[in-house]
Image 1 (cartoon, rainbow, N blue to C red):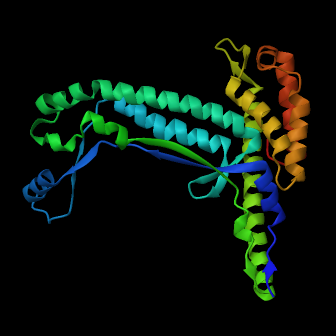
Image 2 (cartoon, rainbow, N blue to C red; image 1 turned 120 degrees about the vertical axis):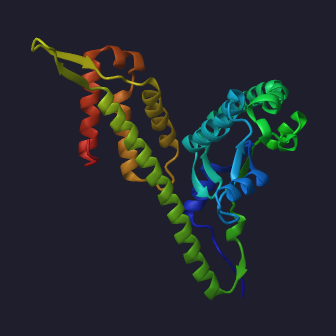
Length: 304
């Protein structure tokens, strides 16, 4: 007898409310091992072979190279983490609530990537010439430097969107194996879903704590004994991130977690109808928002 294993309900929920995204992001570090120089250093110091390596930083003072690599390793990776959740290795879960935002952000990233790469390619020939006649000295080896036409292949920025797989759970097996397999898949799917909700909650609480702190005031005593009160800096990005989470988590709560929904609902009540400018510029509204967020955090014992 063959049995069809049903998909765990959490995976069904994820499949209908999210997709998977895989971002391939590679850079040219510009670092090269010089075997001859390494051998010379080892001999000069009377050390054994293999004790050390001389690493040449071929692009050590190129601002264009640094800007491109920072963008690839920093901006891209941080953006992906901000809009998605862990799934498996380099594959991340993208809620459909964030899909349009991700696509718009990705379009901007592709444009910036092309611009930064073009900047590097424009100065690259002059940079190699300078390395040959000035900065590299006797360490210079033209073979270390790829041709400018090869720089395109040294960098890669791609993204792949795929559905949350459901077919993995539709196999023909015996009843006994089907029961064991179903338990395993249910446990695995539940762990993934719970991990996502935990990450959502942690991100949300962190933003609420930042808002609570930023809405407060600093007190200092002047040299003549007067108490001076000043506003703390309220960062627009933090305020807008809170509004973004309120909207996203309303649509994407795969386990229907009660605490996450209550946090979302409570913060929505605090911020609804209030712009960043109103809260940032009004001492009364700032104090009100800060106190209300503090009440929410205390309500859930989240350590204000």
